[in-house]
Figure 1: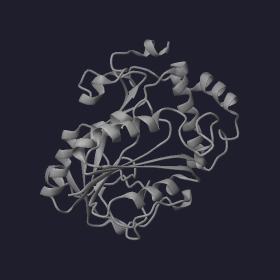
Figure 2: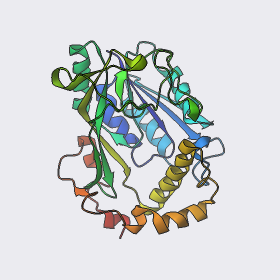
Figure 3: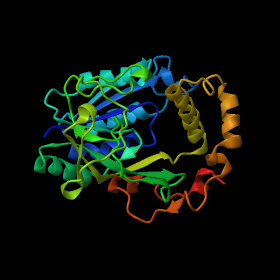
Figure 4: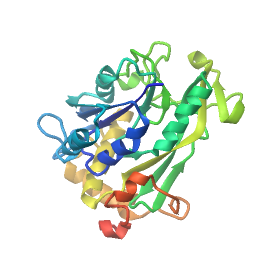
Length: 313
């Protein structure tokens, strides 16, 4: 097996180094592409005139490559402005080594344990017909010790962002939202959902029997993913929320949030978003996290902090 991990990012100095460090021992190649996706809306102060990061992300990546990538596993490219997610993702595909057989799509605020990735590689070897696995996603909220969502892969969820799967050379990502139910056979895939299961097989393996996915085998609930994107200082969290709300417009085809100025949208968030208001953060949605984080995160400056230390009420 030759496993390539792919990371697309903009402004991720809080976590990008830890993400790379967490997957580095378990993969054969890492493709990193930096760029601003215009479809999500241009938020002032969050990109350079070339569509690149304004924080220390690039410096941290280059430092890691210089000091800790003697084998040359990492390909890092600064793409700049892309009109949509598909354009950036398709450029990343051109950087994937030709010998790649399997693919792990990693967000720039998601950390894994290397032993879990190695375990999945063993699973692919044991079951040659296995095409992909779903992950259990743990979403940390305001600090490392509070979980807001613990999303277990109880359904078949095939998405470009949360799958460890076989790689199909020449696959392309749709560059229009209307195309987001693409043909797998046509090598055009990402962001499509099929919440159905049929015929559970040995140890949780299931065979999908529908449309042109018939015969493709997936396994569920086998690899935890630690999502830290909602643990930020207030200023950075505000920037992230602005970008998130504008991304919602891109998905829905609306312009409700993209039509707002930065100042108006921030005021809206402060009045209505649960991060600021606390509304909705009940015992049903929040729980204490008492388990272990990936080892690389023990060195993170946020590790010993609580939400009050970030300035949150």
